[in-house]
Length: 83
Ligand SMILES: [Zn+2]
Image 1 (cartoon, rainbow, N blue to C red):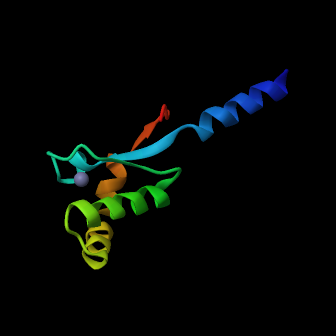
Image 2: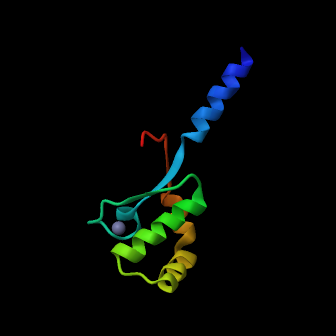
């Protein structure tokens, strides 16, 4: 049935999440990977990690993000979510 196919597609999409590796954004020794259901929560998670692990402040992270947002976007990978 076509309805089933639609539902399956939605399921697949809902389980594909963007992720960003800390090692890709300048911390090669860090194994942290930030996830989010979309770009906004992904960067929120990355910010939380940056502040708590790499000594950023809210301001220094926002500054870095605004300077490097295009670069960071290129590093975002879509993962099919088995987590
Ligand atoms: Zn890190």
